[in-house]
Picture 1 (cartoon, rainbow, N blue to C red):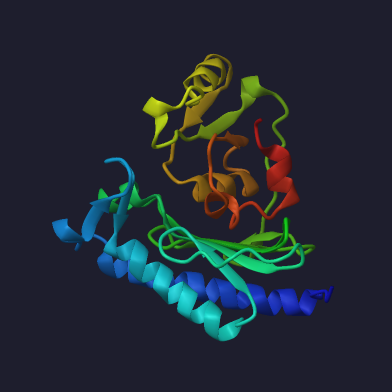
Picture 2: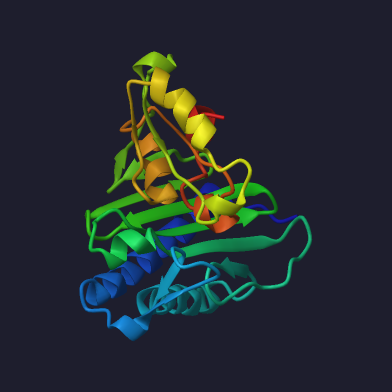
Length: 238
């Protein structure tokens, strides 16, 4: 198994950041200008996909195919390469995390990109274009926001915690739809927010803005970009 040293990971991270920021510019071009026919539903009405999601994903995929032709890609909308072995390098993409926020012109939406070797995270990027923030991390290199290093909260008790959560789109069909967990934390935690973007929630945990985050039924593309940092994973409320 060939290893990627720190210099190579930094190079890959820089390319991932550039891809995410290019995709973010595409999203901003669409923001507030979507026609009704450019907004459709997936399996249920509240799970939306837009022309912006697709354009963002195609931009990222095109760049990754060019720069890393040997890597596999698994994206939310159109691309899912066949699985390889345990040594496979695979990109997980969410071209627009927080689509409902985007449609309603709320600023909490992001492009999320993560590179894994098997189950090991190597590179992660969360770019929130409307907020002007890019969270970036590589294995062994820490996490940064617009180039500045991050650290997680020092909060140690739920009673003092400022938490974030989310709910699945198919919540009416699921026995465990997070309402019971929400009620328990709601009565004990200092406060809870629901941003509508798991990528932003996790990035905010890395930045110490939230003390913890939990959500059920997430897919790999939801968490691969912000889920790199061991510090973030250690702070997840389970």
